[in-house]
Length: 173
Image: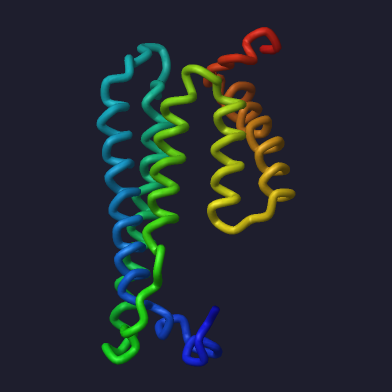
């Protein structure tokens, strides 16, 4: 519940120490994940006849993660500098929980992908992500049912990237 001080406050007035820490850690984590993706993609085999190899898409996604991490971190620093020390008295409880939830969802995705396949794992990850960040069950179910199919079309049909079918192998097209 927002306090009287939070109502009508400018964006910089809501920056609390826990929020600042959460955003800086989240930004740093995104950058670290992106660096790991770039490092991991270095070992992908190159194809002679094609100007780009299978490492291109992970590097593009890693570039987006780096930009997102920088944006989140710099925004937190900007908000922190705009807040006077007297405004930093009320900590935001459980501010770390969404960050830990994202780490758990990413780890779960990595562990379940080889077993369940892309479609089921992506649906579960989207369902959990929408619920963790405050979305309702209807939105979560819609996202979980539609997004994996759209992503499958983009990766498999347009970019020719094979996604694992897992337990849906008998229905693969």
